Length: 458
Ligand code: NAD
Image (cartoon, protein in one colour):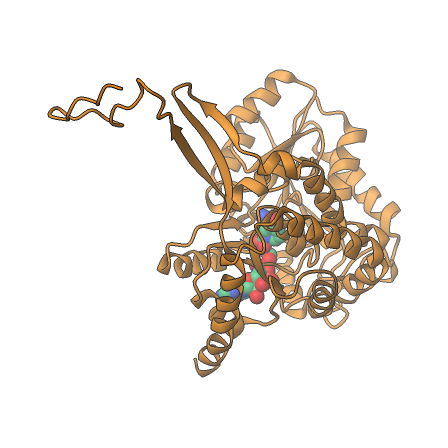
């Protein structure tokens, strides 16, 4: 508690100074916003090797893994290309009165980021926060410390240090940050902490964006094209060792195709990572030993048929868990109840599409849902009966890629959305302004009251 108070005493003047800069209009200036967005672009393009290396230190993985971190450079470009349009007044209606909306920055924004894409998930929300004209504090995850330190150094080098800051720290620091008054909090991480963030925000009636997780299902029906299906599920499931919020969590396959799918998944693990995935540089690491233990428990208690991987291949100190496929685990096992967030693929055969829908709907609304099918009727049935933050048909993860495609959860998988214009709107206040004419003949009071004096004739 003493530590929280100490940090709080440190952060209060910091936020105060940022608010003074904001009130002085520094970040409202469009030229300032452009300079910062250009800074993010340069930061990413001049440092992609260092970013890849830092990510490797914390999470392992190959070059492809590093590419996943530099997309904020492209997001900054997109914002730069559309900034004039986004910040322009938008006409609503009126002849006697002119009614329009004008986006205003919210003020001082706190971004709390997770460890699984340490640069991407810190800087992607930063782009719209800057485009909207806010001051920003980023709190990266303490669980990816190499990335957090590099992020701080790069932000200090490339961006305006008075209005954009990185504060490193763990529980005490974050608790102290959450005690401050913010004008928006943008949190990405798990739902338990999401509730803590929301409670802290309620103290100051601060709006929040919560980008959370969940168990994102894959449904494969009997008509699915198996070449595309197997590749597109596999490549995303094992990327970053399954530590992706929109990774396919569990796979429901029609019983007539389940064996074929399972055998092809096993073969794909072999052809992608070889006999010894631990020695394969392209295969990543689990973030820390605590998470290795968590994933190990999910495997041990699943009670299904182990197809490949398993606890025998785990090396705790190397933070290695091999790609593990489990066929037909028990539905009440933690593996089928909790978000996996690790390299385990449960494959569950189903008899009818209604059975599959029932299984998915027995769980909380997921962040993503992936349907693999060549039947339009089946696709529409699943899309209409199963809700999720976002969805793909015949692919995985790609719903998050489009520049202006809104990204966010629903219910327990999150609230609010961002990416492109949606992020700009999320971090702006959309203000309605009405300007009424005072021309002769239009000088009546705004709303005539019963005893209101008649307007003076000209
Ligand atoms: P994490 O442990 O790094 O936590 C995220 C942030 O919350 C960190 O900055 C951390 O310091 C802070 N934090 C942790 N405990 C806290 C507490 N008690 N009080 C205040 N702040 C605290 O990351 P994580 O939560 O393990 O990340 C994994 C989860 O995040 C998964 O559920 C995943 O699905 C979700 N996720 C969602 C998205 C998305 O965009 N929707 C992206 C990535 C991860």
